[in-house]
Amino acid sequence: MDPSPLLALPGLDRDMALLEDLLTESVVLGDPYLDTVTTHLLRAGGKRLRPLLAVASATGGERRATREDLLGGAALELMHLASLYHDDVMDEAVIRRNVESVNARYGNLIAIVAGDYLMARSAGIAADLGAATASLMASTLAWLTRGQTSEVRTAFSLERSPADYFEAIEGKTAALMASSCRMGAMTAERADAERDALTEFGRCFGMVYQLRDDVLDLTAVDNQLGKPAGQDLAEGIYNLPTLFALEDAARGDELRALLGRALGDDERERARKLVVATDGIARTIDTARDFLDQADRALAAVGSATLRDAFGAFIASLLEDLPAY
Image 1 (spheres, rainbow, N blue to C red):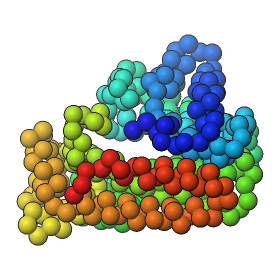
Image 2: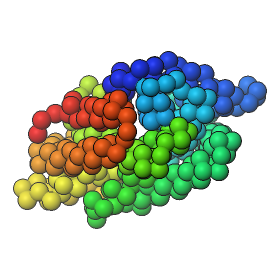
Image 3: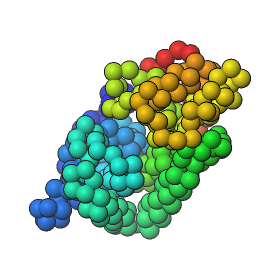
Image 4: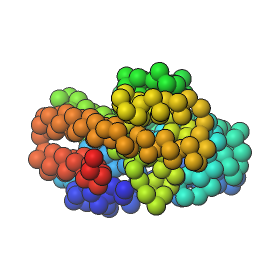
């Protein structure tokens, strides 16, 4: 999903083009080797979803982004990139954004150190913007760590609960998006009520985004996500559709007998088909719709009708291409 065309705000494309240059400027140190490593994923592209939310929350399509707005978005993107460097080491990933992962090309130690450097640059940018933004980024990092820990703690666990799942995705995904919207509201000096409303919208956006991704992990075809369908099952990450499927009277026991360990290709596909054959997908989409309703209620407190309408359409678009179940 390319998010930029889906968020129809005047001038946003122009602002995001400026952000690309700022991202590179923010991490290039002058050391040829380190610069190559730290810009590896930057040059591979990406959705830039977090800075998109930050810049949109700041400008609302009603003015050009200031350097402070762009720096706020850059700080969030660099924290996100740092987490990808670290995640790929933990997951032993070899591909990221259709290019060789940093750990596969340069080794785990370099990937970890480069991720630490990106995190440091993110913190430095936030500190330059002021104590409040530095505090926001520190809180966001704590949420990221909590979410990652929760996911690792419950890997391959048949006792993982929906509460465990929500704890993980709120930390790993929703926290960054909530902070992105809050960052934009802060650099724009919006009123406290709008800051809180945009933060809540960002949290709900992140929850819907991850629920969508978890549905597609089980239903996507033709390598739509850049990985085989059902890959999370194979890696022991039992997401909400799987947790719902384990409750199924007809297929839950058969699925349970397969899970709890790493799966080969044939077992992964068998488990995937079992999940899809239950109401797990439909229940997950219903859960996403609940968060969509929460997001709409939050947006009611945003003063700009242009921003309200754009964000409302943006989050709704996440569910439009999901299969019917």
